[in-house]
Each structure stands twice: as C-alpha cells, then as structure tokens.
Image (tube, rainbow, N blue to C red; front, side):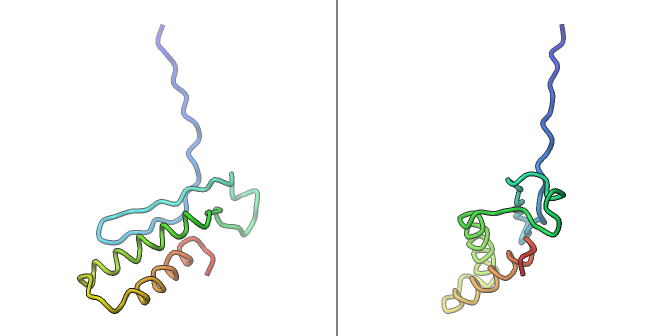
Length: 88
C-alpha cells in the first residue's frame, strides 16, 4: 500500500531581503495576516536584530570592511529591514 504524504500549508512570508546573492526570508509565526488587516508578520526583537546585523554585514562587505562607517551601516540596514517588513 503506498504511503500518503500530506503537506502542511506553507507559512506566509514577508518580502525577501537580498544583497550579493544572499536571501533572507522572514516567515510569519502569527498565523494568517488576513485575520489582522493592515498588520505585517510579527517578528521578535531577536529576529529583527539578526536581520539588521546581516544587512549591516553585507553593507560593510560591499565597502570592503573599511573602518569608520559601522554606525552608518547599522542605521541604513535597520531602515531597510523596517521598510521590508512594513514598519517604516
């Protein structure tokens, strides 16, 4: 008798953040966003900070890791992440 595999529904995903070939997908843990009009997927503070750190790293890598622009990299990365998840 063949086994039957069922797939669970895929989680809703937020926009992808890409830079230099790396892709970060933010998955919603809060269920279907249709239940909450005008809301974006919930991210924990740690998840958001991890995305910002990764985006800041890619910015630093793009400029050759030259010292002196770390704060600018972080601020711009934070703005990018907030824009992508719909909170800016």
